[in-house]
Amino acid sequence: MAKKQKAEEKVCAIPIDYIKLVDDMSDEAFQFCVDQLYPMCNYRVLQKEDIRRIDLKERLLGFNSIVPKNDGKEQGTLNYYLFVLKLYFDNFLKCKTGTKAEKYRNRAIELMESALSDNGTIEDVEDLVQIFIGLFRSLDDDFDHIEKYIVTGITFDVFKEDADLLREIWEHKKLVPNGIVEKPGLLDKIFGTDYEKKTAIKLAYINNVIFLCRCLQNRGAFAMEEE
Image (cartoon, rainbow, N blue to C red; front, top):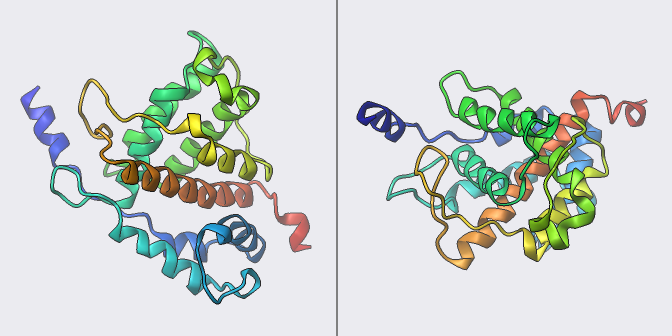
């Protein structure tokens, strides 16, 4: 057990490669991403139609400076992002035993660990975000009373309308996760101040949108627009 804990303490701070993520977007995917994120970017001069890839990259890279330290040590944007997503799973995404939804939820936890390992890939995060969206989509009509419901089914796919779902998750007052967990580990931590909570869910939303755009592009959602 001591060796395992020691190994966990050596997990590297892993950044999100925002430059590559933005560069990999098609023009249509990039514009869709800007449409979602522009209202929260607080640009004073730039209008939405004026936003270039370099402008979005600059804003996204600035997140590195606001990710809080973990036990006094720097942590990467990917580490922090996955930590927050895990809290959403812990707090809100309860699944019925033996269902398809539970299998996907278990897979999501495995993907979090995999993404932070030496063999982690961007595809791990993409699949994780799709599961996150799919499970929340199953509860979309019940957010006001989400504590009373469990998920039984899931559609493992993404749609442009999921951008509205992600924004609703971010803005809904009942969907702010509490961060106290019983067993500390790679993805577990205790939230600090209200400011940190607001920062955490905002960063999670922004990253969710970016990966949604990537998933939509991979599934040809923008193909018709490109024609």
